[in-house]
Length: 216
Image (tube, rainbow, N blue to C red; front, top):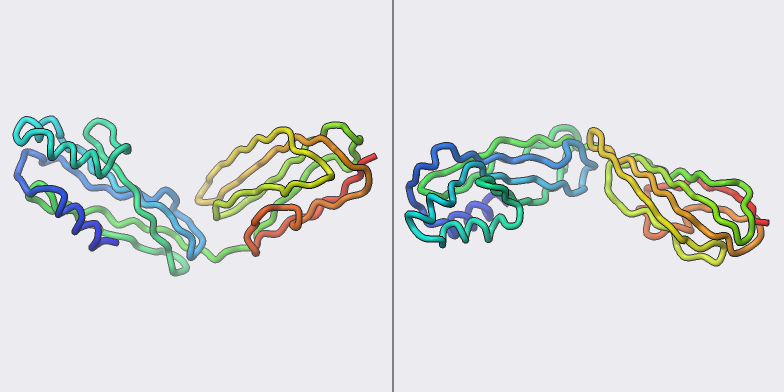
């Protein structure tokens, strides 16, 4: 990934010497903790590129090339793009330094360290009324703590119909805390169990705490 980046940017930017003394090349990880084998994005940021000065000296081609590579992630004179990497070792994984050759100079980034952890047994918890009224409305709350990002969705069923959905996600120290609230209409009477078989495409190592409820 490093060599590809160097080649692409060296090719796209015609080496010239301008007064870009304050240009910085910074790399940031969107998460500092990730399960081994999962992807994490690195944000590449070029700070202090004075595109107006480039346009005055050489026309708009340099500035347009810069914007084409980093668009739409630029604000003012700061330009950014993303790549994905996979930590492969337990503990600290180092990425970088990365290099970009442009403007007659070589810019070297900082080193990013991402902590790799083993995938742990994860569980989706279900909270809803234990007794529901046929043709009535009820609320299902699904809560999950995870170091991976995956969707949590129920399959279609003849027991109930989902008529509303709201979700929230927080990330603290690389851990995702998701809470999903489903509003349902009960369509079938009986005693039922919500378990993993009623969810769509959950990873194998994610468990669901079964929940038994009655509709009458």
